[in-house]
Structures are given as C-alpha cells and as structure tokens.
Length: 331
Ligand code: HSE
Image 1 (cartoon, protein in one colour):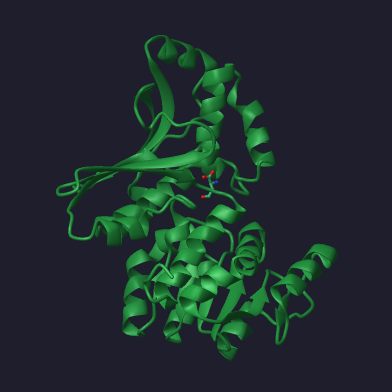
Image 2 (image 1 turned 180 degrees about the horizontal axis):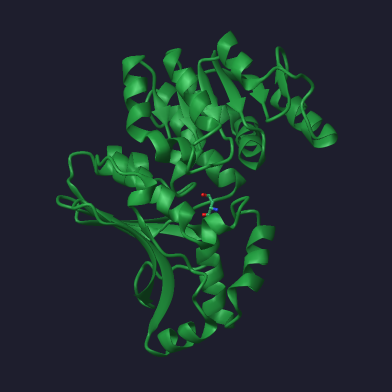
C-alpha cells in the first residue's frame, strides 16, 4: 500500500485528490493499492482513517480540514511514502515549498511537486539531496501542465542531444494574445476573463510579465540542458505593452504575436513577445501550451497540450506517481 501525504489543498491539491479518486482503478492497476494518509493546507489538516471524498466534502463545507497538525509535524511523523506538494509558487524564495521538500528528501522519502518555486531556486541542490538520501523528486507538473515535456525528453528522447527548446509555456498570456488577435480588445479587459477561467496565477503579474514562463524555462534549462541557471539569468519581457494596433499590423502581414520562451544548448534563455507566422505550429490559440524540441537524432518534435487547470495538473502529478511506483507496462 503506497501512502501519499498531500501538502496543499487548494485548486491543484484538490484536483489531484479528485483525480486519484476518479481514476483509482486505472492507477491501482499500475501502482497497486494506495491511500492518502494525510492532507494539509495552510491552516488545517486531516490524518488517520479518512476517505478522499470525506476530506473534499469537509473542506467544501467548512473551508478547512478538521485537525490542526502542521505540515512540519506531518513530515516529522513520516507516515507516508511520498509527499505530493502543491503549495503556491514563489519563484524568488521558493518557500514555503522548498523547506518542506528538503525536509522530506532528507528523510529519504520521495517528493512529487507542481510548485515551480523550489525547482527554480534550488534545482541542483534538490537533485543532489534526493540522490544522497536515496529518494526521488518528480516535477512534470511544474512545466506545461498536462503537456508531457520533462519525461518525454528524459525517456522518449533519451540518447538525443537536445539543441533547442522553443515554445509557449504560459496559458494565460496565450489566451489573452489569442483574444487580442481575434477581437482587437486591450489586454486588461481580457485578463479578468482569464482569471475567471481559473488558470491565471494568484498574482497575475506572474503571467503577464513573463515570470511564470521564465520560471518554467529555468526548470527546463537545468533539467534538459544540464545547466546551472537561475531566474535572474533569463531575459524576460512580458506582454503588457502589446497593443491591439500591433496585432492589426502583424496580422495584415500574415503574422500573429505570441509570448515565446526559448532555451538552447549555448545558454540562450529568453521570454519575449515575438512575431509568429500564422502558419507556424506555434500559432496556437486559447490556453494551450506547445513546445518545439530540436534534437540531433529525432529532429524536431512538437508537443501541444493544456498547460494549466485542475485536472490537467493532476494528470502530470499522477504521471510522476506512476513513474515512481509503476511497473512500466500498459496494464
Ligand atoms: N498561470 C499558469 C498559466 C498556470 O497560465 O499557464 C500554471 O503554471
């Protein structure tokens, strides 16, 4: 029986719990029996014997969970095999997730996270810590939501030299730019609609200023290219200065404007709005993400998928769970 402790019970944490309950049969075929042994949010917790459905219902009705055992205590008690960490991202300090993750890895247990902050701030430190203590850290959910990128490059393109990665890594800005292209409306008006969709970051400047895309690029550069780069190394320009008039001129000439994130093997790290031919596969619409991966053996590989959302992020978290505890077969 695999025991999962869930830290963070907001949109992503609840989405993960719901997906585990809904797809239990499919997941158990791959990893055997599992249970959530503890859930913590920022103020409350639930431990002992409970079902996922009970925890979700309690949180919905009362806005909290029934107990007050803190995250640190849950980690110290150690009644779990893996922590799934879904606390909010802070790309500058990495906290509070960074401290939690270090503590769990130090205890020799596995971590799966959707939180970009800890990986942006301390990628190599965390990888080394995991290796030293015979533990693992899964972070597929930090880049591109449901779109498989990290493990696709690690496994599916294993043995290739990755030369360049270029793509759209933020759904909120892609949604805003798509709407600006089609409707010629200014961006602040569309941003509030993106927030209603529930894909924008808690602080939407993370999206529109390119911080979220920059953070994902740092994770890709450190993991895929084996670099040791920090958030400050990314040259970032967001979308706040793009006007409806700029779109009009671009479209007339057969182009659109998209927020492109690019990293290459020579150290290029850039997020900026760029002209993209309307016929280019990266001219995608709505909240989608996409990346074009250039390699030496496989040539170009293009991946497209939903970059954010409750179910989508759950899909990536579960893929790490199955990667860690599954038998690798299709059954
Ligand atoms: N706010 C992000 C986006 C979601 O719009 O893509 C998850 O990183």
